[in-house]
Image: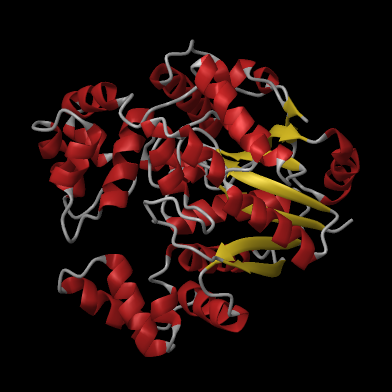
Length: 393
């Protein structure tokens, strides 16, 4: 059985995602498509608009055969570790192909860039450190040095999806888990804020939904996904971006210096900048804008704030280096042969009934906390991670 894997967020699911799943299946000649999807919080540290179960249902109705969670210990990370968690899960589920959207579908360039970054020469590392010493942000410094080393790679690394694609290839190198590569060219910008007749961006779609512009939202989503959205809205299963602002600011204002120092990626004084800004800001967006500098980019601060809210420390992430189980969010009833394939060719145990899993496992304990915080922001009872069940379509 030929199984293709996709790593996604679907925040929320739109026509571009449906097209990518269709193309992944076609280009990879796949018998089944597995999606590993961010659960309650995304790679930039934001809470997802819809619950993992609702987003999994959208994907299953629009092209996926099974959806598994990418828990917060990997979903709320920089691109390198986000990719590492996702690739480890796909490999452990028996996928032979990985498919991803990218602004650059030049496979040799993607592979050479990944090889250079994963196994840098001393000269490369020295050039990177020299640029960082001038105060240049890490992504810009990396792109500049890569462009000198490998023409074309600097432009590649300035695009978000191509950067993630390189990280997927780096993860395969690091894990020693090669998969066939099936890039799907991205046709529109990841950050577009306006819905157009072209394939939409999730940013633009979220904006339309939060404005209550259902007519525009409907044009950007497959009908089956829009039906799930409407049901979630009518039932109150929506998490607005500002819903946890007060909880976050309270948490940041009451943390000790030791707790700040224990946060992942705490270095160069960024944790002090975050702590200082929390004393003035009353909302998450204001906090991040106030704390943001050339050296401390918005996304890095956003992830750090979410780590603080979730109680994620650097020590915890070292304990949860790679997923040791795959949490099943949902599947299509016709996909039963896929689970026989996973049993024969996969290496990870599956979590179906979450209540039966060991709650003392660091990443799982953190994931249940993430579900409870997401539920708080959506004005829902605690315990969602244990009660939502597996979606069957």
